[in-house]
Image 1 (cartoon, one colour):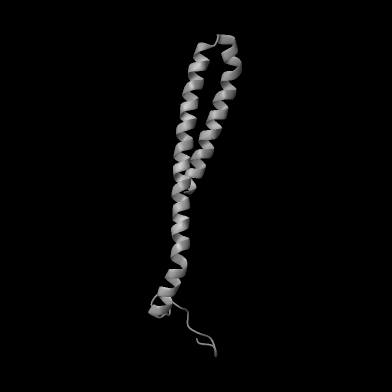
Image 2 (cartoon, helix red, strand yellow):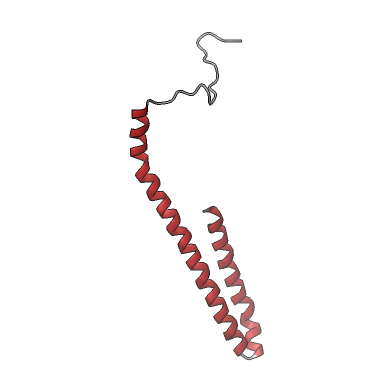
Length: 99
């Protein structure tokens, strides 16, 4: 039932399309922003890869250090070091999953 002054719901087929000049103008306005955003996302992703690589390298160096330390000293600090590394990896994975 149509109420006076009420429009029918819009669907994809009935949406008005802007004239080509307006589309081109809108594209010219938005294109630089979209390119900059894409560039920043790519930079952020590369930084995450770099960070993960550094974390892995440091974790390996810490493992070597832990293996060279006497047993009692290792037991005291091993849990802390492994917890720190795991927290960093988890944060890195969460950030990467958003990208």
